[in-house]
Image 1 (cartoon, rainbow, N blue to C red):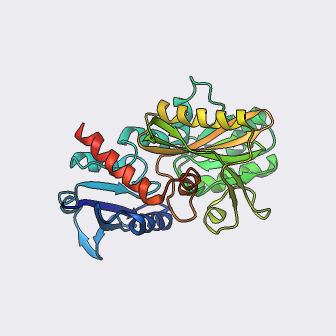
Image 2 (image 1 turned 135 degrees about the vertical axis):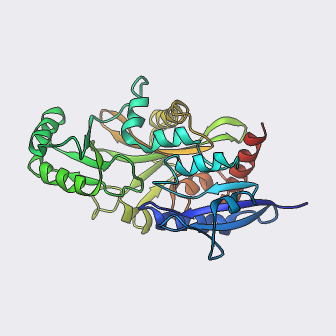
Image 3 (image 1 turned 120 degrees about the horizontal axis):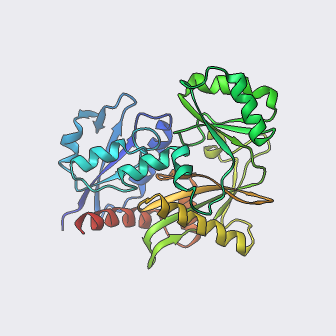
Length: 326
């Protein structure tokens, strides 16, 4: 029996290039080679597609494979762009579809889609480079709206790239100015104190239409203010799975993770991030292509329920092919 030819896309055009290389490398290492023939496709930061180090046109790659494992993160890979390309060539692929990916990648749009649900989110404001003539006035408005501490995030970015913590209202104008020098759009949120958690969900897994993995409690090192890009991957963060949550908190995290997944019409798998505060469980954002490196949270949760990385990869690929064929 011939093996299924799988193009594993990694690298890409975003700030998460390195993380994507790691995700793709881990997929290559763990894919079941008795079922699949993996083809390593590295997309450079310039958008060139390399197969075995040789330059290839995307159409040549896509015409010669059965399915794509999308191991990209961030811009181009997670925002609907590569999904539209794959759909144009009618190639099945892992992860969410183009429109859902574009919605979920944008933190402001995500919150807008969830506004008619009971999902609890922090107070926030959308600030764009083009619309800000007076940063001092905007900063005063933010202070009036939601208190003394803030989180500034790029509207469309992952792995906490570009995220800034502001602990003093007097520092907000300069922080906002710095953020808008690097990003065209940012979201400013009220900072919510509490414990950090994340929860993955998987479509059509273990006999359930939507299966929730155990919520993971994230305990960052004291030297870090938040779960930033560095401590995500350097092994210094405690990732406790299952997290030390009471049953009602655990159930609510799982319920909201499923609700976000279905409300945004996401596909195959996603991972939602939360702050567990004294006044409730706050949803932060959703990852449509969560990291799958050796240090990543999603594989850890799968192992906790007795699954394996290889089994999960097989599930995603066979599911993508089954959805395409039906």
